[in-house]
Image (cartoon, rainbow, N blue to C red; front, side, top):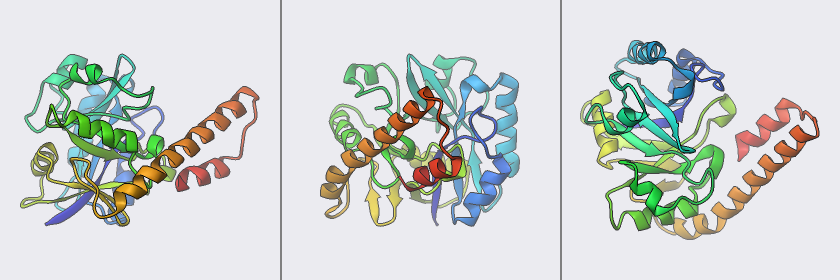
Length: 262
């Protein structure tokens, strides 16, 4: 069976999330998706709340829709998505290095603080890079720099590229999604396919393989458009910062409208 799902989502369990888990399920199910990869901020949750998140994901999952629990953690200003948690990890090192066989560790928005160095990436036992983050790279194209970095890293290590929408509110929806084919619809099978690179990243007519390869003549388009989109997003962030410094509050509808399109 062919299914599709969305990665890198935050619910009300995170301090900056605005949507409940039940609302997330309802919204994305109506949009035709079958699974979500939840990634709540670690610094917002206690050990007890982590177990509650895992329980809530299990309760909301059924034969038609699965929510897989995960966390986003920060280590030395680097962000990692740990997907497939089971509540047995006690600290950052264990979250990254320990737990279920199908657990996935992804370096989130690796260009968040500038271009990452290869030496930094070697420090962490990651399964992949988030080469397409809706918030930092735009909804329409993966970041060209990230694609080139993945290509270089794959010469030495079997890493995969991942996409994520970094969802906190409904204006963040509409970005890339993961598409995969399963024999059995279960959390374990979804994670196993993602862990072994049996999926694609898609949006509209754009299809990106887990190795970062682009179909047809899409490579040239991404190479040209990705830097432009990233520049536009940077400009939006600069204007937002300037408005904050000048104590100007643009109407929320305008900000959300801009964000929903880029």
